[in-house]
Image (cartoon, one colour):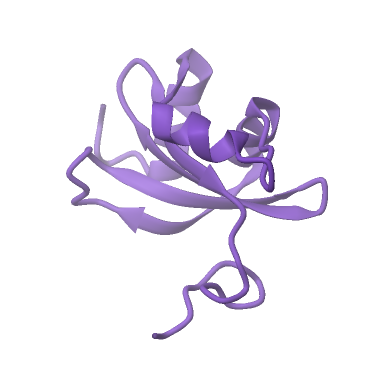
Length: 108
């Protein structure tokens, strides 16, 4: 895929073709205190914003997206490929690690 296309466009174009949930993502989403649905992940992809861009990730160019779905913040780490979007993980960000708006990591 063309690297000159911005990452959010690449994410949405890849997701329109197919979404692949890695086993780690499925495990994280299924934790009782999270219960994140695939519909919620799709909402993050469709409406969310990129808050971190991982250009040099070992899994290939990936990013962290944030959206508020049903009034709760959701983070999704994904990697666009030519024919599909890989969902690496999805989780509910916590106040101990993230600033109030869940867009910026707290300084350690």
